[in-house]
Image (cartoon, rainbow, N blue to C red):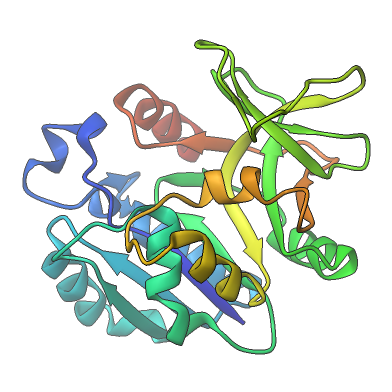
Length: 246
């Protein structure tokens, strides 16, 4: 099973910790974010993992080499010349991710005990182009879904901005926050090529929203309680330390 870990971010919210290392190598409870995500993916059955790099990317390469790639088939998608954002990063890694089965994408700064197998199976059953982890939590930007958890649009509650053009937030729609994990079918690659219009750097979120009426994009809501933290900021790093000490 294939997966990609986004580890190329600049980690600006964690400065000064990221002044001399990539965010993915910041430690939580004695282990780096990257190791924790790799371990989570490995125990779920993902054994072919692509990691994109940019900020202090050579340190990630050295870290993986030192740990013998944790016994997995790990590839590097090198973005040290240009940080490509999420959509561009996935498209650059196409030759590593393409194939006959969906692949998982996981932000390096997401710490969670969600059941990834259940999410993967839900994606397979729905036959969606992409399935995104979402949750009812407070933020400013939300995906908007219908009662079948099909993506209908996006809204920024701070600015009032909506997407796609002409989107109307109708009664019965649900606003849910993205959780930094996707399951994606390889059919997305040709659509990303068209959407990017030759530009190497672009985000996956506008693609999902602009194309949600042309392709099935589903939201996944785990029915049982689970822990989830965005550990890319100082205050949640402290929360994570407490959580892991229990």
